[in-house]
Image (cartoon, rainbow, N blue to C red; front, side, top):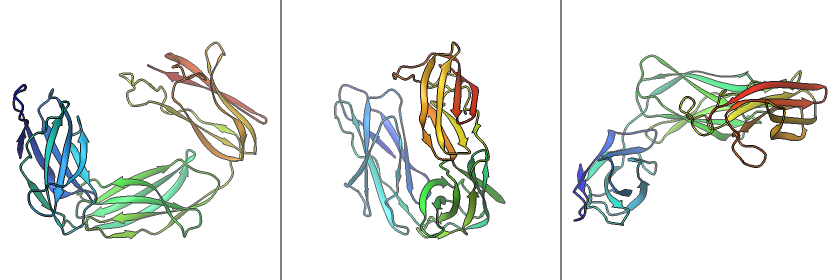
Length: 307
């Protein structure tokens, strides 16, 4: 589908407007379009209705994004879409040609297994799915009593694989005690069902422990070799309640950042460092050390920052 800017001071240009695979995706209709590069687009207006030639604007998508997920849908309903583009001078293009889609896909899945395991100071959930149709997602829910559950994450489906497909989810927000997990299997037709409940019991740590940070090295400014690692995570555990400190030092032993300095209960903890010092300034590239001190415990590990 094609539409154009109509403005005398710039050439006409074209944008292809389509629906990805012409199906709904994880209980949403995904719209995509392609714009010619280096053009002065500020945002795109999305129009939708249940009848042809929609004039009801439902959202704006700001450049350079060229896709939109419409979650506000009813399975079985036909939806019509078209878009316009707006440039930085607020010139508005003509409407695109119209597209439509019927949200009638059905998901058929079978949950083969679902388990939870405490490992490396975190709870790892894993489940195996036998899938014979597309378009589903999994809402991960957690409870401390096995009755009242709260959403803690969402894992999308992976198309239409053959055989078994394995999914994973990591819960790093942990304390001591019993925890219950279940999956809300969301079907493309709007229906859902719950998995069996799996339980993990975490006892108090037997000893103090300071883990190696990850990722290591990391790059807050997105260095070419470490792009995406804007901060690093340090995990530690305490066998007894008491005062604990966790401090970043440079190679000369000078304090750079005090991450933790408080009274904690026995349990499992984690903290992030974004590469800044105590005054909010960026620490330079290089080797640093982080030291944890508690009652009768002191340990130091190396950390590498690359900008």
